Each structure stands twice: as C-alpha cells, then as structure tokens.
Image (cartoon, rainbow, N blue to C red):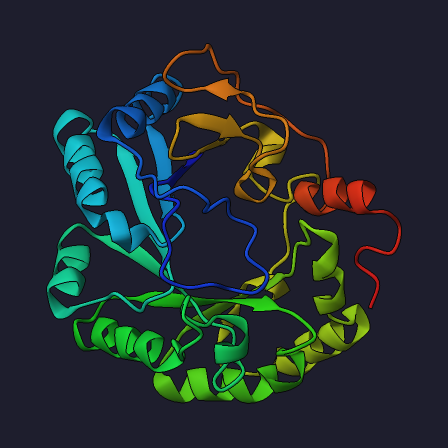
Length: 286
C-alpha cells in the first residue's frame, strides 16, 4: 500500500506554539495538483491511503470532496482509504454527515484540556479547546469514528494521564502520542523528558484504549518512508520526504518533475534523526 499525504492548504485558524508547518502564504492546493499526485501513485499500486493535512485541511474541504469523488469515479476498482488530520474546531453537522458519507477516517489534534489553550490557541490568543471538543461531540453524534493525536511537550506531559481518562469516558477508542519534533531552536525548551514519557506509557498499558505508541513495528520499517511507499505533496505541488521535513530537501514538483519515491533506512523516525543532526546533540534530551 502506498501512502499519500496531501497538504491541501497552508491556511490555519490556530497558532500552535510548536507549529512546524509553513503557513506564511494563504495558499490552497488546487485540484490539478491533488489529481497529479493520485495519478502518480495509482500507476504504482492499486492500494492507496490518502491523508489530508494542512494547515487546517477543513479550510479547503471542497477540494477534499472533489478528490474523493475523483477517486471513486476513476479508480472505483482500487482500494483507497481516506483520512483527515484536523484540529476539529470547524466541524459542523453538515460536514460530519459528508465525512461519514465519503467514508473518511478522522484524526483530531488536541493536546489536553485546559493546557490545550496554552499550546493550541486561536490566532488572536483566544481559547480553541471548547470548539475542538464540540467538533468531537458532533463526530460522535453522527457515528463518525475518530482517533486523537496529541503532541507531547513538557507543558502537557504532567496532565496526559488524566487526559487519557477523560478520553476514555468520552468514548474515544484510540490515541497517538507524537513527540515534539523541533524545527527551530527555540522549540528545544518545549522538549519533554523521555524517561517520564516512557513511564507514562507503561502506566497506560492497562488502560482500555488503543495507544499507537505501544504497538510493535515491523523490524526496519518505522514508517512508509522506509519501504519507499510515502509521497508527501504540499499545496504548491512540491514533494518532500515527509510533512515534518517540508522545506528541507525538496524532491521536485509533482506537476513538473519526474518524482521517484525515496526509500530511507531507519529503525526510528527519520525526521527526528535528521533534525537531531541539524540542531545538535542536545535535541531530544529531557
């Protein structure tokens, strides 16, 4: 299976303090770019997973609908899975209904409860947490399955066990913890203590919720990048190794160049390894 990550917009309504996305220009991906990326992969495999990211991808929901409908019409005999990674603040009942109709899986990004407003405020500094929780409630009321993605920093690590308890009570079935990936030196002050994080994971093993971080990975295959099955395309059509490394070593443009899927040998996150070398030995220490 090939994994396509489409950055459908660089616009976002939040201002996360650790954001690594390039959101300087209010630019949406156009349909041509999305179509070219899909056509490229369907020439290589008939099994594809497409994830829509941003920015905040729901700001360009029209393109998401268009892409899914294109795939359903042209590649209806292919196995294609769809997912959105969203902050959840823009989800409406109409949107939830459409997401369910298109069979798109949803990942909601939220870093806790009260502490979430410190890490993920609106651009004007106002609280976003209640809007994200409302979006989660709407998804639940429309029976749209969703998981939670939480970026782990030293700001929210002390509160994560209680947050997991809240998610279980809410009815959430799965959560994935993303350790902060530092893309600028000032982010180093947000790095969590790895030993404390591992202790938390050990405590959570007995909790009735699927935690992606506790699942064993195939040897020598940390992610799709290891097997040369990952294609990340940003809103301009530029191709990079993965979303975290946007801006580092562009592989070409999907609309103009002959792209070759990169294959990387690594038994851990390649982006983290790359950034560790870039920022020095202190990166990643608790």
